[in-house]
Image: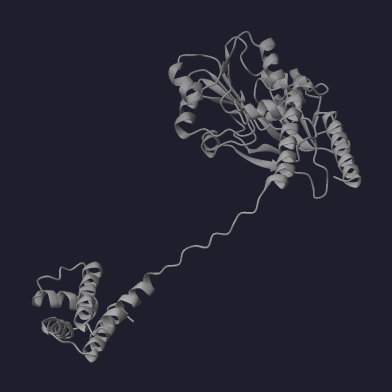
Length: 404
């Protein structure tokens, strides 16, 4: 390489090295994925919630199997089944099992932005969405309703652009726990939209919240929001165990892929990138140096037609018209066997009628054609006119049989 090429190469390598150093020292971006996993310390994980519940309740149990499976094996367990996730959808059998267990004097606590229709119909409630006006920045403010829980305090949340709430409830049998509304300058709620309720169900009770992010690390650790989350949890009986669901989670508890370890650790990630870049450079430069032209191989031509014409010319030049006619007839009979699936040895009246119906010919046409074939086979000498007539008759038969 000449000096000019060396200069370009040095500039390119230096630029790549600088970019890699800057990228390596770049602060790690926050992962805002709403995982709700107990072990996750990301903003929307529930690691802090797990620690908070350990302080508030004497006995907690982490449940990693579906509620249907757990309750079928532990239906006599008494306490609170606690579920929190962005969206939770039970199957009919699982929901019926949960409701049956709740009616035995237990508590079902669900925090989710949406609920399935069967549950809403059972509790006689429905939900709706709360949005700001067109062009306005969406902000929500949450407030507890119980006077014993500092109900005059407000808890803002500015990370979501919408909020769900319970539009219709059974006011006679439902307790309002929390309300939500949009706000701009003040922390006052103008209109109360119910976002957390408690409803008696049999001998037990059901607590629903449309604000699952109230239980995430980010919300609990921000300002005094811990009091709001504790207020929601205060409706759970502390004297009984709390079964914390780890099945209905958008995130994974454990990552088994080796690539996750590489790409989630800065040192491993950049070592992996360096290997890929090195391999690419090697392929580019070594490929140019050693690649050779691939010779073009001309495929062999199909000589079947030429061979057939040669053999036919030999017969014709020697005036052996009889063998040509016999080959032509034999080929035609094979055509009938392969296309119409008919046996051609015993050619009786039933054969003619069957072939006529299958080939769109009349019985007289078929019988006349085969009479001509038999006549040629019985002759000792065949003329050019006979050969031409034979070929024409067979071609006409094929064209009509195929609808042409």
